Length: 193
Length: 171
Image (cartoon, rainbow over all chains, first blue to last red; front, side):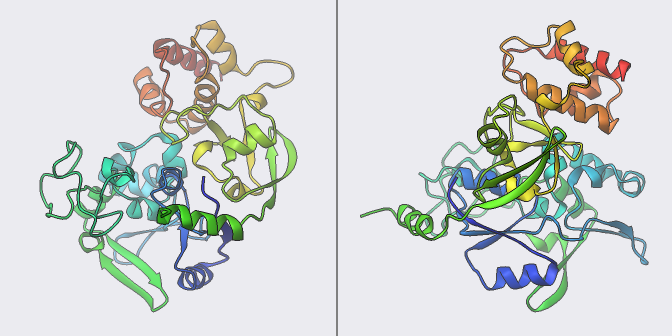
């Protein structure tokens, strides 16, 4: 693997400060997608900021009848959580239909949302890919594209988002709560990607 | 002209090479080691601690040969950075025996001849130990589904499932 620096974020504010001051840094939580992409030379962060220890691991009912899921809740814990099993079996089943138990034990909820496409050409750094290198072209449109999208494509990209969990969250009209240097805001799930 | 990727990498190597001391509890023993940030838990176990029972198969989280237990949960050690597991309790295939006795899963794999070449076996057994601890699989079908992260290219699956069923009954 390429060399990179490593730092641990102490809290959410510290994580935001660290990422805002270093454009070459990336957050790491479960690592299941990012480490893989680094090994394939698709990602090359100079520094990883470890957010896996942040206290964002709760799954709680909200006053308005919803459920607030922490970004660091592992996929397995979410799928097997009594509240999710009882009230959102669609979400539980979608999570368990993807990856393997080992990966689901590692992968975080936030990371699941932010994982990258599995398009063969996104992974193959010897080929053009607009998603990996904007403006370089799309190899998938005239390539091996059986795993790519049929609906909702553009002339620039026909990649799909690989997450089963995200399909369920979109169907359930979830809201994504984000925090950045400018403060906190919410994004409708369908508008997030 | 050098490719931009290559040039970038040279700069990076020149400026960033500091290693990080970490502490892990591996198979019940406190271990102190100093690793580069990009060292995976798999490489730390095999190359730094000489625990070569854990295997490197695909190195991309797809085959399960590198499965170990971290704080009791099964994970792919090839996609885990060792520095991120500071303070964690790691169990590898070398740590499953108790009081000189094989772990029930190890014995069951022998009883059912649940391997051919044996390369995937450490991962299969550690994964099955995690599976039993989770308590979600009750039937052979559920075992097959929840063991889908462990590939056996020799095709010993029927015997692996039989071995896990035996160990589940006895645990």
